[in-house]
Structures are given as structure tokens and as C-alpha cells.
Length: 203
Image 1: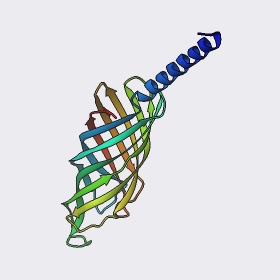
Image 2: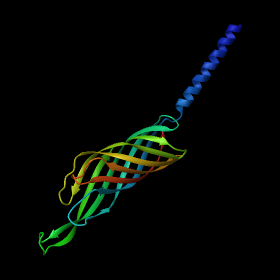
Image 3: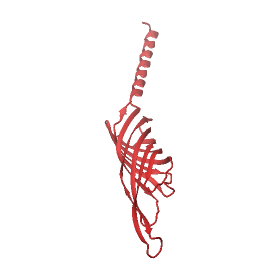
Image 4: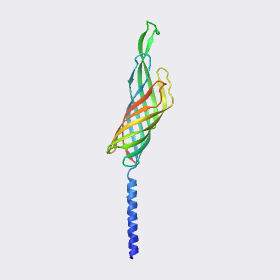
């Protein structure tokens, strides 16, 4: 083997080694599928009605899956679909007998049920080995809506979610607070707090 052939062989080995390293680095999980299940609490803020109406939160359900792409050691992008059942009710005040001197303030329950499909699009900052901070935009679509007093709601809404994710090996817990950008019945903003458990699966 000549000197040139030896140098060519070394270059080839070096090239193959670099190629293997590149493939190996690329093979490290950049994509993850994260199915998740949890509960939520929904509340209306900035709402005004006659009397001192009190809103009482009710527990709902959230189930779905996200896909996450790791951009770098510190940053990631994710998107997904989440089906939510959101329940809340209100002790709404009204005056019986009109507004005269003989009227009295009474309360009645107004029950609201929402079935929604949420589509979070998030940027994640990996603050540590186990902690991820996320925010972005969350369009959501009202699949069905029912209120005792016959209220109506727009089909599409938009929220800004703020989330803290604790992630370990094959397990994660996430706490997310979604702030609505739309007015509910032109009277307030419907915000949701969600606690969920997920299982990250490398793709």
C-alpha cells in the first residue's frame, strides 16, 4: 500500500467515523409523543351580574396527546390536541318582585358545561434536567355548549397558556394555566387551570 493509499484510507475512516457520530447524534430523540390525562378547573373572571353572584368551580377532564421537537439543549417546540370537559356554575343574583322597596335579592344556580378541543402550540425552555417552562398560543373550538339560562358562545376562542412541566424518565407532570383572550358572553374571560400526567415516548 502506497503512502497516498494510506492517507486516503485514513481520510475514509475519518469520514465514516464523522458520519457515524452525526447519525448517532441525530438518532438521539428529537421527537417525542406525549399522551396525557388530567383534570381541570374553569373559572370566569371579570363577570358582573345583579347582586353578589358567586362562581363555584367544578372539576373537569382533559385528555389528549402532544408532539414535541427538541430544537436544542434548552429549547423545544410542541403542538397537540386535547379534548376537555369544562364545568362550572354560578350563584347568580336577581331581585324578586321587581326593583321596588318590597323586592328581595335571591340566588339561583346557572350551570354551564363546555366540551372543547384545544390545540396548544408551545415554545418550551428547558430550565433544568427535569423542569420545562412553556408558553405560546392555544386555539380552541367549542364542540358543545350548554347553559341553563340558554346562553350562547362563539365556536372558536384563543388562549395564552403558561405551563410548568416536571419530566423524568418515562413520566411527566404538567401544571398549565390558560388565560382566555376572548370575552365569554361579552362579560368576562374564561380561564382554565389544568393538572395532567403524561408519558413521553421517543419517536
